[in-house]
Amino acid sequence: MMKRFLWTLEILCVLWFLAAGCGKSPETREAASDKSAQVATTPAESEFEEDVEVATKAEEVSAEAGEVAAKIEETAAKVKEEAQQMDTELPKTAGKVADVIEMNTTQAFSTRKMAIVQFTHKKHADAAPDGHGIACGECHHDQEGKPLELKKGDAVQRCFKCHNKPGKPTRPREMSAEDWNALRLEYYHGAIHANCVECHKTAGAGPVKCSECHVKREK
Image (cartoon, rainbow, N blue to C red; front, side, top):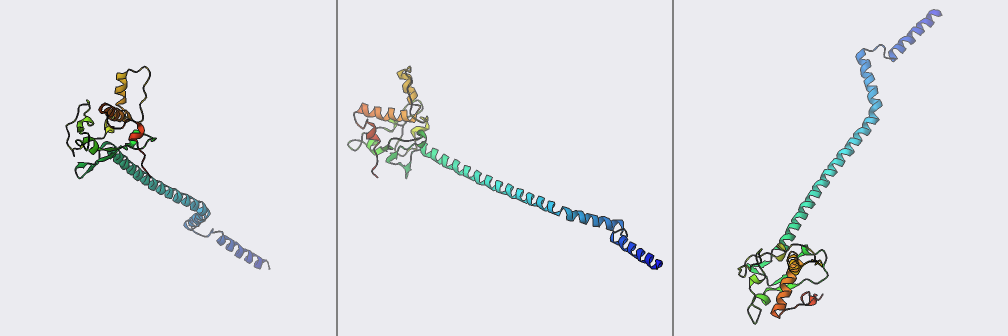
């Protein structure tokens, strides 16, 4: 009876020894330990991989947004350049200056209260009785104010190219008439009104009141 008990106990000890892995080689036990550790850390690694993937996608979206922003800036710069060109160059038609010039210099005013003036070349430049026979140089001059020798169709710049201060000038009380006239010419508003209105007054022809030049169009 005792022998059978001891024999049974011995078999149980062997089975326990094998189940505990004591009978395995060190390499086998180490591999099993690594596998257990890998299984134990899998959820954390999976969460880390998801975070990395989200961060990568965020970087890609940010890069795409940067490219879109760059394209928008490039387009805006082109539009601004075209607008500036329109503000500084008079339109032409087949090598000839367009008859009606819309005095719509967008950079000169942040807001508009008056209607845009429609300037007509024929009425000013053509000889009487169709026009007033005004020479090109009466309006188009150099930086010293000297008339330019031009003929119809020559390239010219808008007034805003030189008289490029925006808004309406204000005269300080202590400023002399000479300094005030010089200051006015720095502004598009001042140069246009000094040239046009003063010419109309001197010649005794042409409108001199605001509403006579700034005529509202019928809708």
